[in-house]
Length: 121
Image 1 (cartoon, helix red, strand yellow):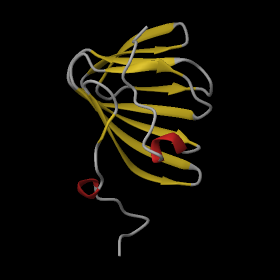
Image 2 (image 1 turned 135 degrees about the vertical axis):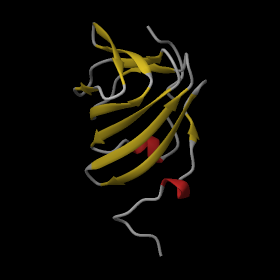
Image 3 (image 1 turned 90 degrees about the vertical axis):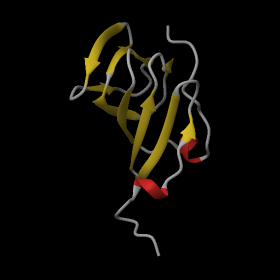
Image 4 (image 1 turned 180 degrees about the vertical axis):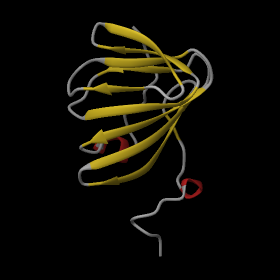
């Protein structure tokens, strides 16, 4: 019987989240969700907004990240915080990976929806 406290990523399928982007919902409970997102160079997390709070950690690569009207290039070890309902998106300047944390969980991700591919600006 799988543990609800420990997650093995090898047991979780990857989902296509748009051209050059795939994600893996690693863990969630009623108040929190952790998602691994891998990008090929040029992969786009389209500008979007949602009512969830989000913090994202750059595991590898370089990304141009837009939050509201502000844009910065972030590298491995950096992070960004997105308040609820603020438009944001990311462009992978090279192959890379993010870890996204949401509160509350993204029910649309659990239902297999909301691909991130699309327009960058």
